[in-house]
Image 1 (cartoon, helix red, strand yellow):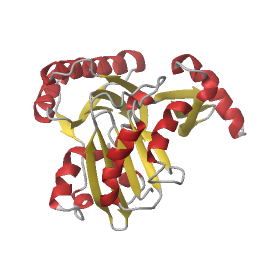
Image 2 (cartoon, helix red, strand yellow):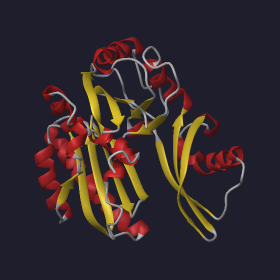
Image 3 (cartoon, helix red, strand yellow):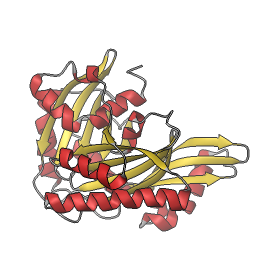
Image 4 (spheres, one colour):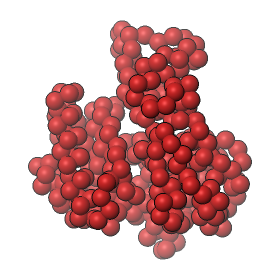
Length: 303
């Protein structure tokens, strides 16, 4: 598990120092970004002024301190997330990656040889292997890494689209499909999980900036996700969750319940994770800390 985690979004940067024993978030800080400084894209340059982003990240350093293995959470819109199934896979890693690049080439929007890949096996049965594959354009990801280079010189221990670790907070014993709505920094991502397997992923920027109009966009996307899971995958969503990291949290949660026809629950965050934080830092953790809690949970630190 990384000891320092950064999240870089279009509106803010968050940093936290984590500990595994006892499990918790030791320190946490946030800084806002000027509008237009960062525009998430999987194919185009994301950062218009790396110096300004570096200054915002530098504001976190006094709180977080120096050193430690580090991780980076990036906007979902930067990554291409695919669930792929194969009859069998080659034994050599290079051959597996070549196969994955070929399979996802049409969905990338950039040459497949420019993709930086991470993948994991999510299901293995007789004659069938399912992989979760994340691809990010190397030149785009390099921009984020360069912004952090003055503060963290070693390579990142993990780099993930921000919604992906949140799936660790969902109960894997739920028999029905589970929908997660994640709203943050002008974006919305919907996932549908079956057991501990990601089955559906859709992420998009919100076209509207006015909060009321954004709510309508999110509701439309949620209904679309449920319908797609049912009609394309044969998955009936029976439980719904939200992680809403905007000012519209309460109102949006109530509207989601009405549109989906079921209660929409907040992602569970273990209370002890924020215990080491100061009162000011706890106020940051409650709206921004879910991905951090998920990273700790996913590494078994809260067991």
